[in-house]
Image (tube, protein in one colour):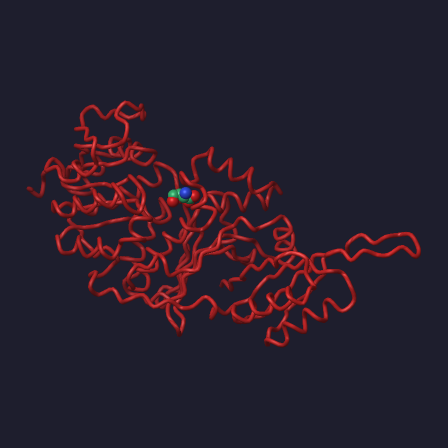
Length: 443
Ligand code: HSE
């Protein structure tokens, strides 16, 4: 291939992102050619249904019914995988492209979270790039930032809002006081949610993205399974009300940090101070904060989903290949990635918000506080939010109703919090399962 020959692209998966990619390459073709030093042209495409109207003209491109055939076809130099899914056609076609000596660009976080180490090794052995800017936080250039711009740093913590659907749902519930189901239905209608929205609201989508960011930030092998993941479906209006009064907002955060016992990776609803920059990231917008020794703290915000924003990241990967810029998939040679050492979630140390439905009778507070004290948990506050209605008639028996009680702890170990909550429940002081939300200290 001559240096000035056009770079020929094969695109598998012509959905929202694939169609936007075709549009953007048309719209920015001239500029891209100048910036990359060569023209970029889509020569082949593949998707499930040839007859579907995608609003883009594919007539000049060769159609392939099988993505694996497009991947192996000598008519393209770069294979762009926009099919999705951790296995099946996506994995088979990426492997076929690497085996055929092609560079690969993918937006597939599930694939890389599950098979990233193996695919990075295959790409390295074949001398090709495996780029994935679009796989984490859509249009935000966080992969390049971590892999290239922060090369002179040691990262200590990385955290972010990595799922637009969850952020949309949580901010609408917070701002409009509407229910989870209604917000989720709107997120699906607007095209933010994955085909299976349980991946969004259950935290798995954010976990896949976090696993990729962790590998680059900490130089470890990708380990998408060694992570604590909790979704947002248990968050209730009572939590938003209490959070607001206490000066917090609730966001689904993905957090990765170094600890003495290894790398802690976790995705869960989190109480964050209203004054923190990331607390003001609303709706479908994503944000990633990086804390590193040389640069201090960075916060990158932007669209985490959507056709053009995601295609913008795909194009940046293609432009790197067009220019001949090659970096290891996770920022270093695959053989230099350290084995991932997981820090146990039970060893996590932080503050906790706890909401209990406490039977309103004398001594309940004291008993709960006593159980916390037995485990060395120090309370910053304990507040009964309101009292259950009392019977009025003299002499009438007063039923013991549960009333909401909110506790905020100082930094403590997760293992102790879990033990304390189990004991309080066993003591019979609370009516329902306790709600527990971790508090993240942010600068
Ligand atoms: N469904 C994802 C989100 C977008 O809601 O952020 C693609 O990862």
